[in-house]
Length: 168
Image (cartoon, rainbow, N blue to C red):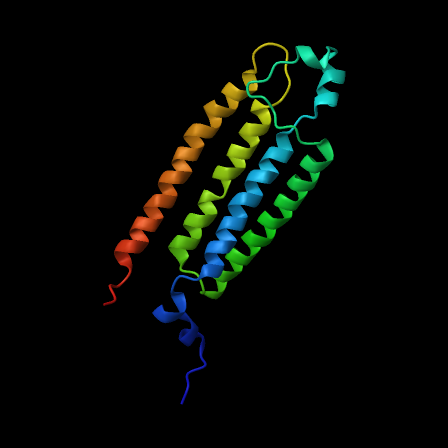
């Protein structure tokens, strides 16, 4: 006689690592990085128009990639959609018990890290006059927040590892 109750789906065998969850986490990270870059990307022509200087005189903290503005928008929107779908799938896996709680929360806590990295890259490659103070301000904010999120994620993974029963 098979057990079809809800507890049958929450057994340790059902909570083993799934490649689908790893792919969803990777999609969440890559998509959020692309969305962060897109959200802070300043097109060269727009910056030249607003700054009122020739494009050759614009300064960059880092030289931007030669990507057309339409491609940046396409990559950013696609990344945002991928990140949202991946986050929804991970939350669903958490809610239904197919993904253990602590690793799932650790994945979701780590999602802002690539988002902040993508946003920082967009700020660092923005054309400016003189020094790009936005890079410093973003680093001033993103580094401590990122370290806190990273520490929380690693702590959750370690606690999960210590609580998990050893299997031979």
